[in-house]
Length: 218
Image (tube, rainbow, N blue to C red; front, side):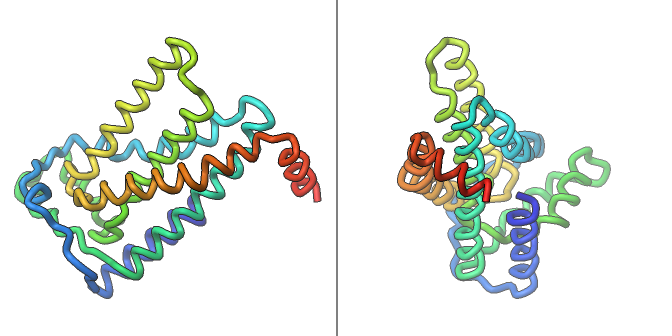
């Protein structure tokens, strides 16, 4: 994920910042009037727990391991399509004004946001990869662990709460527009329903397992 996702993401992000080429402006009054909540950085940064979660929890049996490998390959490929959008239709996230107004010198959150902004320039807007990838991970975890007991149901609710906080944090930290969130959710739903889940269903068949194991042993 670091090699094939993070490095291309950062490279495109800084290239767009250098070129300053804007395809369109998706700003709504909702975006400009939404509060800036500095502490929302905490749920925002939890995205980086979703990557190991998908990898570590998908180890229940051999079928799940096969699905785990396939899911992460597809997650990476779906990320590359988003990179194409970043390149073809770049959008600047012009929402950081309230951050400068609220975070005065000496504020606890000032160095946190300064560091984040130095790495993540205000580009790579839509669809939001925070939304896309966290949603895909939520889908696969719910797929692997269906709500068959009260304990699992409770864990699902905890997961959905954490995911919801992550989604809204993208806007309350002024990192994304509402447009980015909506398009991210739409892209994640489509890729899961029509591409990822059918592939994982096929990966659970005996015929596929034999072909997969044979290919891995070549």
